[in-house]
Amino acid sequence: MRHLTRILLGTLVVLPLPAAAQEARATFLNEEGTGTGTATLTETPRGVLIKLRLGALPPNQWLGFHIHETGRCDPHGGHESAGGHFNPSGVEHGYQAETAPHAGDMPNIWTDAEGMARVEVHNPFVTLNEGENSIRGRALMVHAQPDDYRSQPSGNAGDRIACAVIE
Image (cartoon, rainbow, N blue to C red):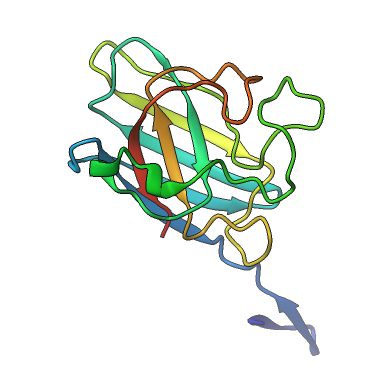
């Protein structure tokens, strides 16, 4: 642990410095394998803040946005290589299900008239640190349709149109 040493009126005081916030980055690939945007993820005291800037999406639409279990994005396979939603607790999908949500469930995102999404989402169920709820090495996923927050197992959000590995 790092420490800050101060001498105050002849008394030696050693105070711990606050830990630097952990960060991760992710670069999105569309269905053709072209880079279309980025995400910056920052550890907070209670979860992870995800700042998303992503283009080449369907314009003026709500789109499903999730964390998927596997950090593999294969555009030619429809990004199926990313597996299902990150769900370490084994609960139901969606904010409206009784035992839900998955740790990887997040609110839908909105795109503007040019198909751009600039979003900040806080997910209180995950971490970048080691442990069961760590998302480092997993994938962020944008779907072609909005998540309905109740259909099992994944919200009926449609095709996977943008995928990014969290590094």
